[in-house]
Each structure stands twice: as structure tokens, then as C-alpha cells.
Length: 366
Ligand code: NAI
Image 1 (cartoon, rainbow, N blue to C red):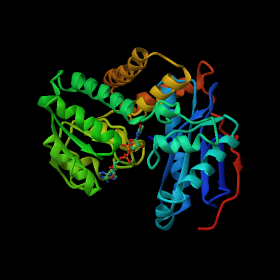
Image 2: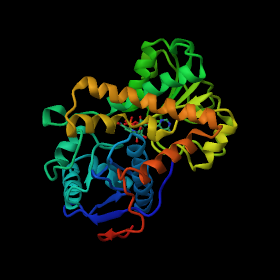
Image 3: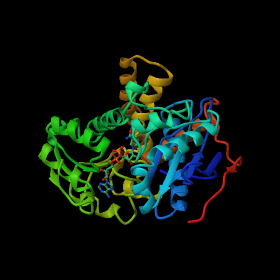
Image 4: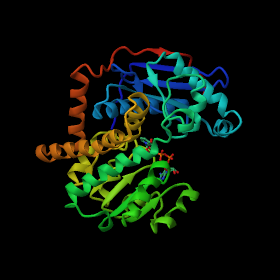
């Protein structure tokens, strides 16, 4: 789901220690700062990392708005090359994390970071030595820890809603789930569904993770075959952009709900899925558990039953969108977009500061 347009602010500067560009996109702000994790991964060029930061920070605006949170959306991206990927996985990682911490701190509290693809709670401890504006450090270091656990809880709440709405409440053990990506979130979802006796077909590009299939008695598909493997519910838990106009006609599933951000290659795919009778649960709704729980625990200091209540409410929110979609015959994305617009416009909760684009920092040569 893309809302990308001019960001409220963009900071792109080379880190003092590493010379590595640290990109921070602030898509929106509210009474509270912009929220969004820190992604460190290889990209073909830093420009692709910049595009990703813009898309992902816009997705965070959608996520916080749909979750009714008084925060905006942001994202940090460090775009590595194959050469620098090895360097910053090893000896120079602490230097890179220090550069990121200083970049976050330079925004003076307008943005709070956290883990994302390629970063972990222990990384947040190192970033946190350079800024206070960081979530999800390990519990021993004063944070709420691994966000994958509440993210998976939110996805599972949405899967329950899909079972109710589309499968007449049939239990998971009567259904087949295709899970793409067996990383932090995907494997927790697979663990839970396997415990419920569901049939699983799974895929991952990483051979070590492919071996997890055995522990669930799951069928292993190749990453290419998974989308057409045949399942009641497809769970995208790898990277974004997998739902393309070309892929949709070949999909063999009744519904799609997963944590991966920006699953649609473009928004027109939502209409195509709808026309093919496939219910797509908008990813900014489904994937909100991590940020919802981190804010509830670390900023709002809520008790655990209240946190669990907020995670269950993610399913309720999807249910309301699906009900409205059924009433109006509009795709769930259209309903979600309408809700985001209302949220951005109403109540002063979020102000997306379009037209105030600011570019700071120095961009580097490839
Ligand atoms: P992860 O990096 O731990 O796992 C992703 C897995 O997908 C890896 O095992 C990777 O090998 C695999 N993969 C990559 N390309 C693939 C392909 N083409 N086919 C099959 N597998 C492939 O990431 P994590 O934390 O599990 O997150 C999964 C997705 O959910 C990401 O898109 C992330 O942005 C999103 N998300 C995660 C949250 C969290 O709390 N961890 C919160 C919100 C969204």
C-alpha cells in the first residue's frame, strides 16, 4: 500500500565514523513524533534505499493512522552494497549503529526508531547509546524487546477474523496456509498455526530456514512456487512488492494476510485481487502489532492485559474494514484509504505536512 509523496522531512547524511549514508524519511508527524524502524540491507544503489525509505515511511503513516495512534510515520534506511554488507555485519557494525544513533538524535525527538529488517533489539541498545529516541531494546537494557512476537499476535488475530468472515469460522486445522518467509515473524506464525493443527506450505530463500519446514510437518515450496501452491490463506512474511498484476491471476488462495510491509506492487493490484475474489487484508492494519505493543509498553506504560487487548483490537479493526468492504463492494484497500484520509483530516491527530519537504545532508557518489 503506497501513500508515498513528498515527505515532511528527509535527512540523508554520511555517518561521521563510517561515511555510510544514513537516510531518515519523516513522512508525517502528529502530536507525537514519527515512528518507524531502521532497515539495514543491501540495495542495488543508495537511490533504491532512498525509494524504500520513502515508501516505508509512508506505510508507517498509514499504520499509525489506521491503528488510531497519535504519531506520524518515519523510517531509517542504510543501503549497503555487497562489499559493505559484510563489513557492517561484522567488525564495523557498532560504528554504523553509532552513526545511526547520532542521525536519529539530530532530529531532536521528531522521530523514534526501532528494529526492522536487518536490525535487532541488541542493535537498538547500541543505537540507544547515542539517542534516547529508540524503542525495542532488549528487556534487560530497558526496552520491550523483540517486536516480532506482538507483530505475529496481530497477524494471528487477523487470520482469525478471516476464518470467521470467509470460512464460516472453520478451525485452523481444516485450513491450509501458505507462509512466505520463515524469519522472525513468519516462523512464530507457523509455530502457532502448526500447534492448531493447520496444514502448512512454506518457502524461504535461506536454506537454513527452509529446514524449519520439518518441525511443522510442512510442505516446502520454492519461493517461486509458493504463491501458486494452493492454500486457503496466503501469509506474506518476507519482503514487499510480491503482489503484482502479473502474479494475481495465478494466485491460488481465498485470502491474504501477513506482516510484510507494502505487499502490493501498486495500488491497482488491490482492485484486481478484489475482482478475482481474493480478500486482501491491508498490510498496514495486519502488521501493526509490533509498533502498537512497543508504544503501549515503553511510552504509555500500560499493563500487560491492556497490551494484549490492543493486539486483539487489530483483528477487530480488520473486521470493521472487511464489513465495510462487503457493504460497499469496494476493495478493503479503498476502505482503509478512506479511514486514513479521515484520520489525517480529522481530530488534529495527524498532520501530514505536505509541501514542507526539507532535504538535509550531503548525498554521496555511488
Ligand atoms: P526477517 O528478515 O526475520 O524474515 C524475512 C524472511 O523472508 C527471511 O527468512 C528471508 O530469508 C525470507 N525471504 C526473503 N525473500 C524471500 C522470498 N522471495 N521468498 C521467501 N522467503 C523470502 O523479517 P521479519 O522480522 O520476520 O519480518 C517479515 C516482514 O514483516 C518484513 O517485511 C518486515 O518488514 C515486516 N514487519 C515486521 C515486523 C516485526 O516486528 N518484525 C513489524 C512489521 C512488519
